[in-house]
Amino acid sequence: MSFGTAIVALVALLGAALDVAGQVPPQGEVFPLSRVQPGMRGKAYTVMLGTEVVPLDVEIYGVLHDFIGPKKDLIIGKLVDERTKLTGAVHGMSGSPLYIEDKVAGALSYRLTQFEKEGWCGFTPIADMIEAGEPGGETSRKAGRLESSLGGQHFASGGNTGIPLLPGDSGGFRPLTGPVTIGGLGPRMFEWLRSEFAAHGFDGRLLPTMGGGGQESKLLKTPFEPGTPVAAVLATGDVHMAGTGTLTWRRGNRVLAFGHPMFGSGKVAVPMARAEIVATISSYLMPHKLSNTRQVVGTIYQDRLTAIAGEIGPVPPMCELNIRLRTPRGERSFHSRLYQHESVTPAIAASCVGQALTDTLDYSREFALALRGDIELKNHGKIHVENFYSGSESSDHLGPMREVASVLGELFDNRFELPQIERIALELNLNDERQTVLLGEVVVDRDKAKPGETVTVRAVLKPWRGERRVATLEFVVPENVRSGELDIFVGDATAADALDGKSGRVRVERPQNLGQLVSVLNQRRPQNALYLRVTRKADGIVVADQRMPALPPSAMQLYDSNRTMLEAARIERVDVVEKRLPQNAVVRGSQVLKVKVE
Image (tube, rainbow, N blue to C red; front, side):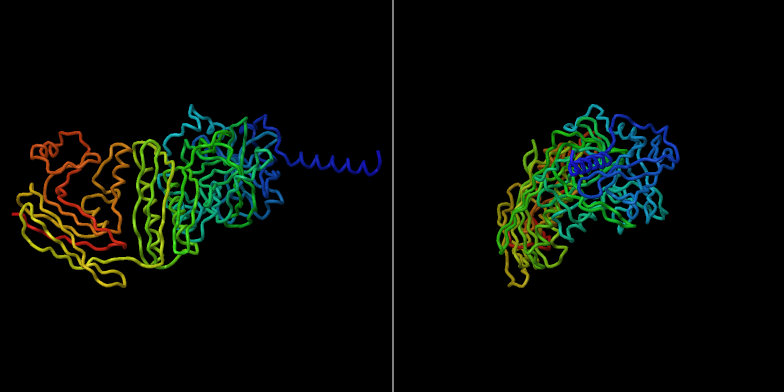
């Protein structure tokens, strides 16, 4: 063998040795918690950059008993590796496996909260993670209703992003947060979405970070093994969101990660993807990883106290979101796919709508916008969404976002079944002019009328920077109205909805199944119309989504006696006539007049 050949062989041998040194040890054995002792040394495996798994030196200090929960302990250690000298345990390392004597002992999952600079950290024992990953007879394709264990609590003050501190908290070990990389949203929508996550109690669990995105077409060919990044995908497409942590344990197609919950939702069906690390950011306040999400490889089916669990294979369905925006500058389309969750989906969908309208070349301070579209449900038809918005303040642009979030929020908040949204298709027609109309004086041509006679109502409309005009509305007094007073309402959609209790969560309709809720949501009135509603006094009830007005006294006595099991609400007026006069503007204002029937 020549000298040159020998050198090449030696370099290859050293390279192979270095590669082996950086790999995770075999997963055949578990290091039991009972054997963990102060003074032991271990290694935690994670990715600091790209996809290369590197070992980090760890000193073990002991075990805090019952720290995570009853009979759920926490291994206390310190990262003493040069690579973590400035960062300590960073957000995104959640799930980095800890090996002691080449046996897996747990997952990096906790750190000290404030300005910690010595690498103190906590590890969730592997046995507790394996227990959390047990499917319990449920598969990823049979995920039930998602119930957040947070119950809407706020674990951080409004000004903190991802710092799980209670008022007066002096620090201590807290779970690492999951960095949620968000691509496709500008600063305004990013801040709005961050505040929505906080409002739903996700402060301290999720750390929204701008930048990063998804390239599902770019496949990672490195092994999907402990120490590699794993992502829970919330949205893909033009707007992309994914919470990233680290894979802890793998047996066949089953995997465990994080060492703590993501949402704390229990049974879930979240798309699981691979990821690569763009950078590890050093910060005493909030060190974290920046990542790009790559190919979706399966489903996360458990989101529990000590781990998230997933299965490589089938991918859960996501909701298609298509937005078409038409402006004087032309037409553009936006496409995303959304994970379905009762708290997350409405906010993400609304942020996609807001992004199409704000941080783009089409943004204008004064605007008018027509919204039309459908929300398609599996087995329950469609909900038609139609409305009109206009204004001159930045807050006015939130109208379409509130509309979409409100409808989706009511769908997911129903008590009957978890809705499966297949597609959301929206059309937005936007121009740069303010189009609003104020309702002025309203007069009726008579104060008394007989059945069969025509009553004429005239309303003065005051357009924004336009000439006043008079709108005329007519109705015929029905033959069955023999006496009494008629209330004549003229006004905008919001006041018309409030008049008969069709306003959001205070509406009098009480649906008894998802189909009836869909029917109720399809009765929403758009704002670009002047409404005429004529009502008269008559006792009745609303059962489910059906109104039963003008009931005889005997029926009302039965309802009032509490001897009925009906889940109903009482109403005291009945519609005689309702008409809508469309306007190419948002109508604001309302008045009520009276006409006596002789």
